[in-house]
Length: 130
Image 1 (cartoon, rainbow, N blue to C red):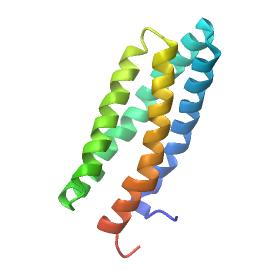
Image 2: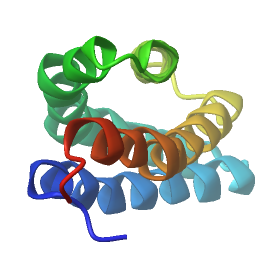
Image 3: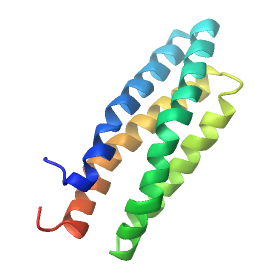
């Protein structure tokens, strides 16, 4: 579905996030300590440079608007997943295959949720003319 202009940049930012989830999954599945450590290092850097700004943008603008429009459950889920991803990212300072696997699964599922549910609801509630 074509995204409203207000959501296009956020939507575009999901592609690199999916690539990051794939990197985490491959490293976790490899069970090689070096691959896990290198992936964790890349993920921590990408989180700081890409994911955290993305989360902050959603939390500053999109989520309050959706909450005001009555989509509180979707907003609560989004905030909870952001918090869990932040926690996993912090814990990756000490790389671990299980942490990487959990991060990969959650990030992949989170992006799919935002694209299929959160952004769809945002388009309906916030941009009905689109």
